[in-house]
Image 1 (cartoon, rainbow, N blue to C red):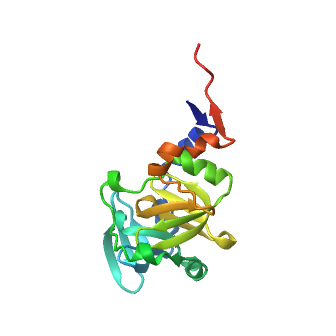
Image 2 (image 1 turned 120 degrees about the vertical axis):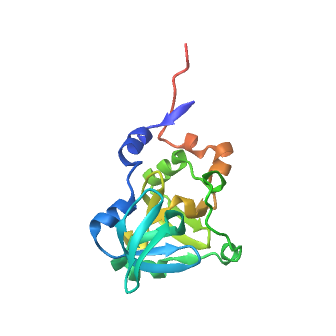
Image 3 (image 1 turned 90 degrees about the horizontal axis):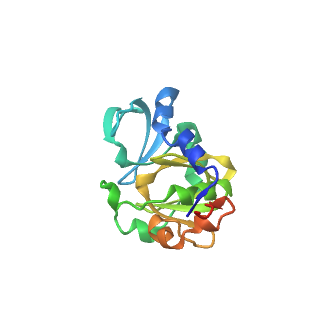
Length: 197
């Protein structure tokens, strides 16, 4: 048994932060990557629990389930983000859809994310439709992971849209792999609990 130094404090501070609240209060256009390879520019007008009310630039109002959103960032960064996103054609060709039941998703444990963020490891997030987001974890919360791409350009990945997460060496950080390998216990932040008397 043991724990990661600083993880509990980080979660207490950050776990309930939402990019959708930030987008709503900004009153700016945001670019959203949705399932079925749809990319829209929109303002968030309401942020209920499970859906988003948005006003799409040049189109009008729409309500969409949050599970449709894969990736979000301020619209003024779109020109910087587009060239940095790659595609894994094998994953794209699987034709995967949004995974609604949480138990069936590809989870990443907070214990895995926290050391990767602190060490500033370059990571490769593969999304369900094949997009590859390469960068350094800048922060994470219950439903989101913010990644700084090359040049420090921030994008926020919705955790439900992730298919795989690996480092430069190809090491997998999905919960299914890490439950056995427990890489967080090998990190310098890991503190072994004192033996019980």
